[in-house]
Image 1 (cartoon, rainbow, N blue to C red):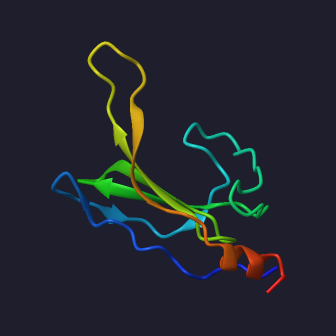
Image 2 (cartoon, rainbow, N blue to C red):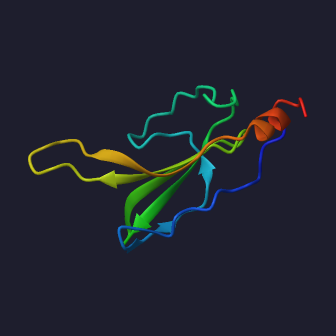
Length: 111
């Protein structure tokens, strides 16, 4: 299988804050330190690990980019801190590009 080398363009800022991105890497370990359970991409069925990058603002991780190397589906999330007294924050999606059927066909060797 051939994987895409197309790397999505990441946002350079959010809410007026400059984001510095780390290099893309395979998403093998979750933020909790445990291995990520790999499931096929919902868009194209690609079974290899998704790609991930971390965006930092003033040295603190604030954004997360996810990319399927099969169909190029791409999502970027912004970490929102929890309100005072709460334990969990949330991730808001700030960018999205759907997977492309042609990329998926190439990935599966149909085209």
